[in-house]
Image (cartoon, rainbow, N blue to C red; front, side, top):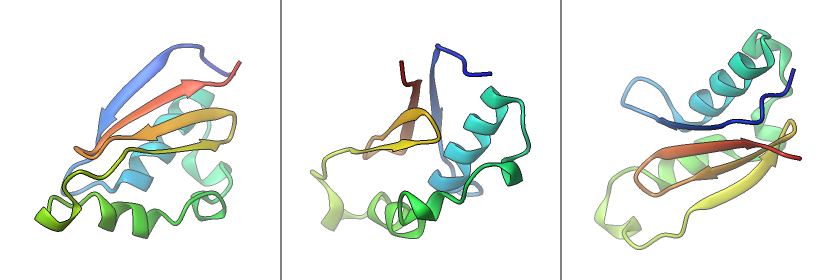
Length: 87
């Protein structure tokens, strides 16, 4: 069941960006996160988490956008994750 609404979430110290994406999409699809394809097949999530750590050398980075499991995902430099169902 694909929701057409937009979702914005923010990763924190205990939850990585990758976990935020997987958890939110699993919630929308009403499935376990373990039932989704691995995110690393689409995006190197550890690299993404490292890129968006709040360190001076990464200031000015552009957001990262990618497609995953029927959703458009955009990760802002501040850790905000925006997920929109693809039409």
